[in-house]
Image 1 (tube, rainbow over the protein chains, first blue to last red):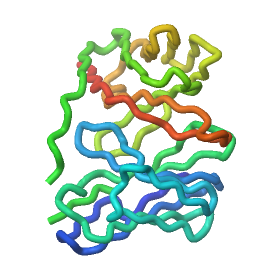
Image 2: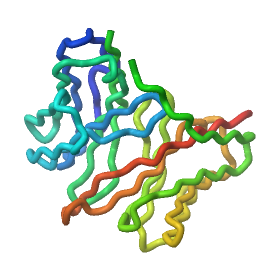
Image 3: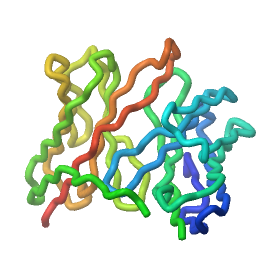
Image 4: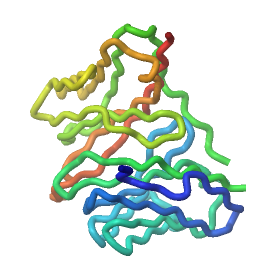
Length: 112
Length: 116
């Protein structure tokens, strides 16, 4: 009964080669978040969607984009991955009337 | 490659001991606080949360204490077990710009190691 699913769990890409990470949820939550987490650091919010409204964090590089085609799915697109983009990418969801966020298992991105 | 990681605070305890993990938060306007447990290679898992109108909340084997005066949050784990070994993150949040949901700001995390 997985609630927040991320695919793939491990992704290897080459420097500069676009990559897309996927997140889906069975919770029917309005809000979906993407975080970047580097080794031994806290998750850092990249952006979030409230329904179809996209909210970018001020310091999120333009290299990171997102799409939410429907309530259940959200994608993270990295247009030209650099070595510094190697990290764990976490997807989370929350209700529109709450603060608790439910996290997926993450996708570990390696950039060669 | 990745930037050099920070050295997270660590706490080592013996199985059966009680553990206390501390967190200082920054925003006095935050009205929601949450503790997550993150095991290696996994996403954060909810442990317990508390609203700013409370100073203590108890769950199963865990207690969260909130001291708004000094902006301090703590997580107490009773009878710590090896399965409790993980990184523990506190996070603060509140309503974002008048919305009814809120973004979370994570603290740096503490590594808990439980020795059998």
